[in-house]
Each structure stands twice: as C-alpha cells, then as structure tokens.
Image (cartoon, rainbow, N blue to C red; front, side, top):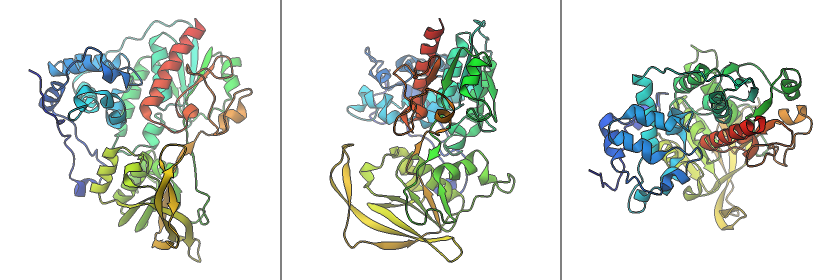
Length: 461
C-alpha cells in the first residue's frame, strides 16, 4: 500500500542546546519502521527521474523497493553496485539538489528522503552484517591513486573490482582526505569513514600514508621506476583562499582548512586527551556562506565560543550552503550577519586580533554567475568586537603536483585540465574531483573517480 503522505518522515536528531556542546552525530537515523514507511512513499517511476540526478547512478527506485519490503541487506547491496561509500553519501550528499530534486513526489509535496534511506541501509548493514568480500582475480596491471579522498577512494575501489593491483598514496597520516579533515565528527563520524576504507582494503587496495607525491615520490617515478601502468590524481583542493585584507596575518586568524583539520583529523576537540590545542576566543566571525563556513561556525560553537557570527555579503536566499546545514547552525545559536562584508581586521599591540571592520551591503543587478551583485552601502562602516576569524571563502588545488610533473596542463585557477573521462595532457595520467573542478561536493568527486576508473580500464585494455 503506497504511502501518499506529502511530507518526509522527519529525521530524529539531538536537541540543539545539547548538541552544540558535543561532537556526537546530530542526526541519529531512521528506525526500521520509519525507513519502511518512507520507502513506501516512492512511486517506483518507470522512467526513474531520480537517477538522472545521481552522479554515480545509484539504482534508486530498486534499492528503495527493497527497503519497502524490509529487505535491507538487498537494498544495501543494490546501492553498492555503483556507490562505494553509501554511509558517507547518505550523510553529506546534497540530495536536495541532485536525486531528490528530480523526484516526482516533490512536485506536490516533499520528495522521497532518498539520502536518509541510503544512510539507513548503510548503517543497518554495518550493524547487522559481517562483510565477506571476495578479492577479484588480478589482471597483472598496476594503478597508482594519488589522494584518498572521495575521488581517489572511488577510483581505487572500482579498479580493484576489475582486477587491478591498486595502491593509494595519501599525504596525511590517516586515509580519507576531506572526509577526515574537512567534515566535522557531528556530521560524519570518522569511524564510518574508516569502516568504508576497511572494505576497500578487503578488496585488495593498498593504502600508503605519509607519502607526499610531488615531494617524497614524483608522479613520473610512479610510472617510470615503480611499474605502475596508469595514475589517477585525486589530490583535492586543499589550498585555502584568503581575502587579502589588512590584518589577515594577526594571531587569531585561521583558514577554515587549518581550523577544521586541527579539530577533525587531529582531534582538537578532545584536547588535552589529544595534544592538539585549538585557540577559540569569545567572539568568532566566520567569513563565507558555504557548507565549510557552516561547519567552521558550528565547530567554533562547540569549542566554547560565546558568540559565533557568519559574516556573508549576500542575503539568506543566496547562501550556497545546504538548507539543512543553515537550519542546524541557526538552531545551535550561530548568528547570521548577512549583507555584511569585512574590510579590515584590527589587532592589539601584541599582534592579536581584537576587532573587525565591516560594511553593510545591498543587492544590485545580477552578476556573471546569475546572482545579484552585492553593493556597499555608503557610510555604513562599523566595527565588531571579534577575537577569532575563520576565513571560509573557498579553496584551490595545491600547486605541488603541477610543479613536479612535466607536461601536466593546468588552468588559470590551478586546476588540472582533464577531459570528461578524466584524461589529462599526459598519457596514462588521469585526474578527477576537486583537483579538476575546484572545491565541489563529495558525490561529484566520487562520480569523477568512477568515470576515470572506467576510462583507465579502457585505456589499459
């Protein structure tokens, strides 16, 4: 019997005034009964429009049909046919802009909660099933994957399933890339990421950490000296951008990359149990309006800041962050200073940040991106007492690979130039994810890794 409710089953979650003081996962997941009820909202459309919005082509109606019947393991296995990281995607993918945006149920109500159901299936599997993975027969060919973020892990998994001997090289001491250093524990528990990585290791994927390709090993060495038949570059976009404002070198000013890495990967939120102190003052300003800005602001709140501000030059409707992340930030007490732009950072005599100067903005005509361009309101300059600033205005690819790899084309933004299949200007070298597109979403990076794995397989055969 179809469930014709116009609304999704709500996601259970911690109370805002409790969760803004801890790093436990905010949302706690569907029960079996809730998952079945939500799955029964799916109409199992003949043309499967939801799949058109999925970068990794998950067979969405098929896995949801299994959930509706209570066949949770079959649902999970259906997802795994095309998605190497379902527990991750179910938590951090912007489904509202992808698969769920195409859902027919969304025309006269809310779409089916595809992401929540994907997460449920992955969590149910991890809790109830012990994986028995069969290692594919090796085909005698080797592929190196540089970077263990979502693009690299996806490419590695897909190639391993095809029989390739795959080695992943990661610069940090822990595999996972942005999934480990960039996304907070309360949104994506790290044991879930490591569980997904463990599944890849069972497939035969080797992971070498503390290896900086471009320094300790050169890309050319991987092919010429180490015998790899192809290389996939999934090095991400980890180089932070700043605004070039006076005072950005003051003590108390972070890039979002550094702030989140110290908290997430280096367990700064567990200091002194983990020896990673993270300075957070009473009044924190986060420059930016994307998901990274929301993550940084919510972390600052949990680290003890009394007042945390999102300083963003456009209005609420223009915020690029997911609506759910904005809502959670507001619920947790983050203050939004919208139509506000910083112009200067002010320090004390000892070099510590003590205030920021800002101006009010108003929205004018649309710019080249189609968004209304913010314009300064004359005479609106004023200061805010701020002792910590976190700059979250975007990131670009690290230039290291380009500098140490002859003949690898990059564009003006420092991104590796690759075609739709991930092929670069160098034979046998492919690339995908944020290293090619600039900072984007986890699922788009996974889609690029999947596409490149197919292209590498075709190239080597």
